[in-house]
Length: 89
Image (cartoon, rainbow, N blue to C red):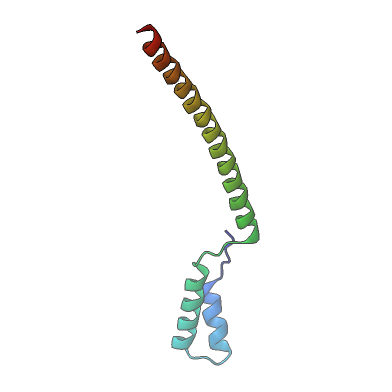
């Protein structure tokens, strides 16, 4: 995330010098400082998140393929055991 910092004292001083009273200047600077604390995702942040999600999805697909093969193998073993039990006893 990108952050922007400002010198609160200088901002209040500049607003007062331009004719604003101290209470208004302090309130405006307080609001701007609060807005700076709000995080906003940049395009780069979104690209990194997208890449991470794609990697996670690929990993999940591989895990699911492995599980599918395991389930099929176990199923075949159960069928073979059942057939053996039926015919051999």
